Image (cartoon, rainbow, N blue to C red):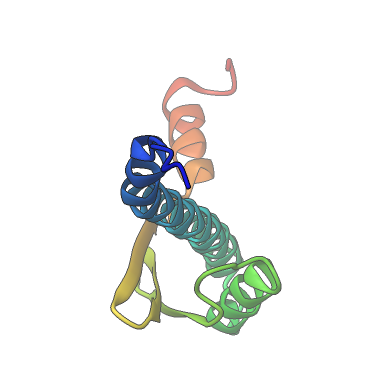
Length: 135
């Protein structure tokens, strides 16, 4: 019986490199999911801050609840990696702050969006009052 020599170096090298390739693929997928969810949460926090500013400018008493409801509506069914995200909304005299956070195991996302409550119509009225109605 003759003994044949078969080269198996390609098989051995592939067996050694495949775990590294699979690990890189899995880590990149986790990063994509993380960044996707972070962008969704950041966008929802910004929209909630904008709605809170608008509602507080109109002096509605439930601006905080409406902003919280909008945040929950915007993230509903869109998050991949962080299924539960929460927002804490602080309504102050001159600004609205939305602190959104989510956590899954050791990974955390925290986003803060802050907008000032502005009254541009007061500035326009002051300019018209100074210059007259020529503007």
